[in-house]
Length: 428
Image (cartoon, rainbow, N blue to C red):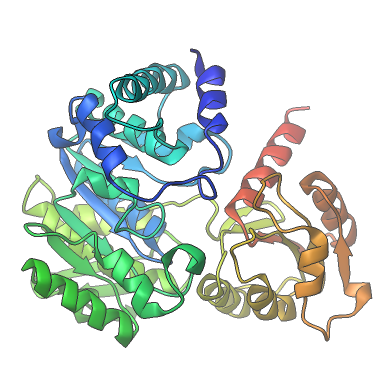
């Protein structure tokens, strides 16, 4: 099974969201069949609604600045599935991914044949197992694991991370996690377990209450990021924790909301400094040099941002209001479990033109559904629709003036497709 075959096999297991099976027993059985690779290194698990990928990027950057051998597991990918598994800042090689995918598939099928599992693990479970096995084989000191969905029943939780971090919780994935902040917080807070060290980002009060109850239940005393003081200076920022000051010239990830994520990363970085040879200067450099593709990422006249819920859209809108003076063409797609109408209501007023399209994903809303979700005050002259990303790019580039900006948002799947098309075009 080469890389192409390995990827095809994994995709044949079904969509990673709509075909997922929430629960930890299958994942634990699979990891056991693989020799429990996750027990060979320290782990940080990051859950939350918005910002968990950014916190992971900050922590990865901090570790690399300190020379800590680090593995990073994130989802979804933008262009290649190998982006999900990074070791010391580099995507896993395709040949190595294929080798590990064969091992995980074999262990999965053996577990079914022996009766330990009723069916083979899902796409996300198998890719998570590939990552955990890759980190063990590479001999990493630390693995940073971004939770896929929720927390309580997410495959990454089976790794039983020694350090847990929770970013801001908001409404998202209500179909799977619950209709209220409190219900969603309960799912995410469940990653906190007896014996772990827990760090909590700034939260709405109803989420804080749930998280505190979970911590009390398992006997963990959490550390809250809102205790970190941040002052803006003429030369950047000063982050003050209970033990240190950090003079940070700039934050590597754009947007004021990243200050909140950086506070959480600094606290986790301090915890890592107790376990590795990691000093304050590494934390400062890590925050300053972090990068996170697809999140307020510029590429020529394009701006990519993975805002796929209302909170993300608000953060993006605030960034546009403060930093962008160019006329914006909004190239937009959304998945069927996202509040497209609410996101469009926030972003459309910031755009001179809107192009609605659909990503090649079974969960993608059709352009007709997106058109029905548009704010009623928007004129037809401002709105364009199409049924493919390639057509969307062509329309956006046609209607956007030379000094304008094409904003691609609403779905990371859309961003990945646009990036793929632009890269292919540049190679012609």
